[in-house]
Length: 367
Image (cartoon, rainbow, N blue to C red; front, side, top):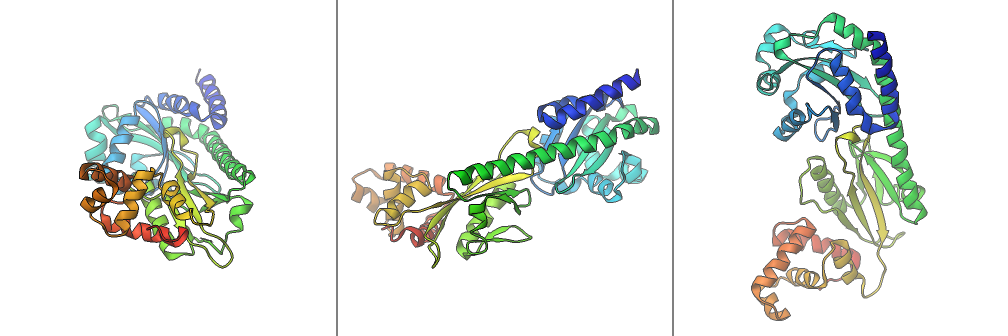
């Protein structure tokens, strides 16, 4: 019976490698092999990791992610450091004393009735490190060596299926960039560490005049634009709102002005294999008298009324003077200014003025 079950799980693994929505079911089957409580597969990253899990583990992972203390989990980095081509248990990476005192066990796992697991790190070629963790209720005791031996029979299949899923995800990202290239738009896809993952030929032509493909992350040659890019990427990683995702870039000797859009790639837990974090899209700004107005309205999705308020703020006018000049009430002007703050990712007038000053370098005077 066990051989039939393992054969069925192998079939399910290779099916899931092409259909990502099937991974929770496969994880559930792995859980049953150790009489476990649930299982998860996640990309191991300090911040912004992605995961897929059985329904029983989703609230546990979500609670831990919301805590904002990924450093509490010493279990995964210790297991990864061993580079063991199979499954490990808690006693393979911790002493008994450490298990009694470790904060991750005592504050996260044990209060939820958990505390034992079998896990394995999968080093995907050219991609992230994926960790498979099968959890077991504390009252049932540690995972046995016999159970680990069963999981080890499946581990090569798990690794191959995960690698295939990651390869498919990369091909989808590359296809997205190429499709934008057919529309005449320079586009690139950034990986989870914000390094260049793939780009179409139009975007590659902008390197190194506009962009730098650096080891740390993709960056702008223009310093002011790069500060905005760094802020947008950092906020996206931490899932914090307020970032400016449309960045004005002034003209250079070789190129006209353009706006670069940072489009975060979002998805549910089943995007664990999608190593892409954002699409970078460059669009030119037409030169001429209307460029500044087009820039304000198009760059930040402002209505004409909101753009007028933004321009008045850039001139240094107060809310009361703006209202009088535009023939509106101060309350209406404050509401419009609040909308401008929200759309531009700023919170104070001085931040807005600084941002509009950067925009003016692209579209000309905005006043």
